[in-house]
Length: 325
Image (cartoon, rainbow, N blue to C red):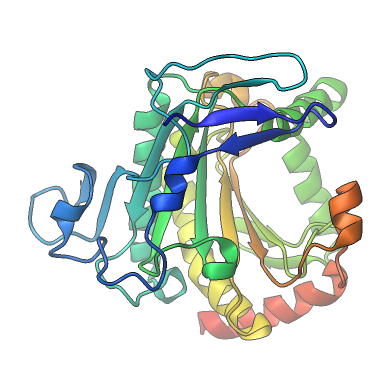
């Protein structure tokens, strides 16, 4: 059964109808297909680190329960009050460690770099067919949507960019057109000048955004000047790899091990990086799952943050510093 993109006629928002996702195993399922010795339970490998066929540190393969349908699958496009069209692309899993109970916050810089380098490699491979976007994310905890405990990230190549991504990119391009500078660079300069929301600033800027939607929402911006994750430099990846594990340990300390979603804003995949880098910089965002959407949020889309980033950032900066030793 193909995945459908259904468009809400009242709001213009997209929704994915993906029945295949209902079959995926849950956290309580017996056994773990991501553990060593269970490689035959996953689709064929698309990446293995190291690549010599021996014990692996990282491996990637197609998701058995994809959010999107393969690009070759057809479907009916409908319009009117019930518009829909096929949601096509590719969906991959990247297992981050052979250890079932390991977590990214426990990683050394070298282990985190292994993962980020593998994600870059898979972005390059998935981007070769020119999808509109390759979305990279990590769900930690049941409340964040993780169906299996074994540490893993996911990549979804979308043949059509949804309105949320298009709107984000349009704002960034518009800022560049008006100001001649990248929005992310101006934000970084303004956050450094303000100081009160900066968590860490050495090789990578870590800060909590002024209009944070949830407590302890945090952004990491490398300084490699590259537009997309697929074109990130080795040093850009390394700077994030050095900061990410102690940051996650700090978040676990100040929020008592929260569920969270980590997203890499990897940039559009169907435009040459030289063009994208004029107005976009790949970066990482972490949103802890500490709040619940209620009536106002559902009725208006207006998210209510019960804290101020000026108050939460110093606590995270202190915890991250302690976690880094």
